[in-house]
Length: 134
Image 1 (cartoon, rainbow, N blue to C red):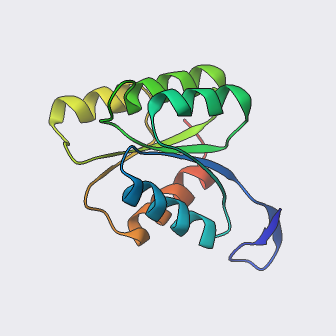
Image 2 (cartoon, rainbow, N blue to C red):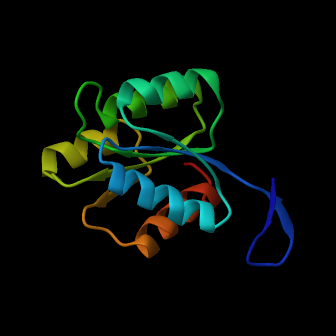
């Protein structure tokens, strides 16, 4: 699929996997990203995300940190192992300093704290996908 970017040139749509056990958050993230021209797949658990990551390639992941079963940190680790260049935004409603430090050390490119608004989400995703990795 092709979309127009801000410079009015055609670019290939980036593929994003959205992972959250809360349907309302997952659906909001997917809707915002789709409207911005991203190709979006969703997963309702860490386990489902692992399966999607093993079956399909993605440019980025947006994942909740705290979920039953496998956490967003587990998803982050597997995503980076399978695709070293993949970019990841983690979201959390429980942003303790220890959790945020662990997420950064594990390779998260951005961390959003709930509640976040659609503009923050879109800005974070666009930023990580256009910024070169160190």
